Image (cartoon, rainbow, N blue to C red; front, top):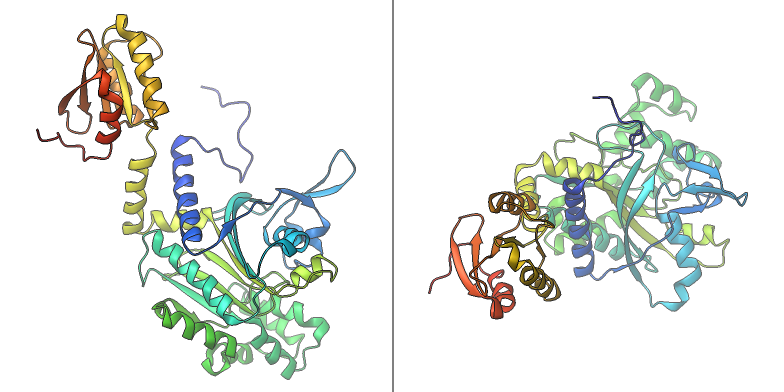
Length: 431
């Protein structure tokens, strides 16, 4: 068979129903954790003015933009991340909300980079931010939500770790060693790649600042270099019972230029893949985006769908939890109505309509079919029950598809009975 003429572009994905169900599991977990922690949901546009990302992003981001001129002659970009959009939105609307703002968004982002495991050109992100609070309590609150999110996915202590650092500690180190303020961003970008850079290239780049690899590694290895902000966050998380999830790692810097203080990344304990989530404090971004009109301290993090799904699938207990959710939520319907007698189709249609209006997910075959084929359709749909409408109507038979057990009910009470029955286990009810 010839290949289709058109396929999804490299790094982009089609979401067939089974893939959509997994995506919905991620979204449902993200949303439920954020809401129970007191965050409210917002949404920002996928398309933004390119200048929003060039103003203060830095690093590789500016070279990874899906950037083009629209039909109105505007220089626009598909958003590569959400924080800049949030800063723009908050600068415009913050006066209408009490502080601090605790907001989250689940949305698509786009980056033109090489597709590989844990990375595509189109991806979904869970973005969580606190704006209007400058103290380390906000950072601790945010990191605790990141930890709670991992626990909600079924991970346990020992599966993952939050590696935290503080850019201010590096700025102090650099200043003591003669790095000029104008070169600070370039220096921090070198540190950000210290675990990925070849030693020879790293040594050459550091030499431009009159520094050696040994000096940098000695700074990273010394716990005395932990900043007061990091220590306050660690104590806060310890009080919450979450201290076992965080560790000091001064090699964490984060690549975007707008970070101003504490930064962190969530990794699987084996470090078998890239960071599951990452973020930090960005106290000057809102002022930068608004040209000084609004000045709000802020901290936030993002978790992408690629890496967290990979980690779930490679962690047995988390994978089992996801599978249970999928079995409960991915079915096309709860009740499949089998029309065993076509003369009773009008009654079956009315029954399906009544079930749907009562909030019961129900379906039926659109045309005449053998009963055996209808049962096959019921099983393929993932339905828990097959409700048989036959010559005995208004008497109905209900078959539990997982056990083949049969029960009976009358059409006059079928909707109320089924609504209650769906709350019960799948075994036959006792008389």
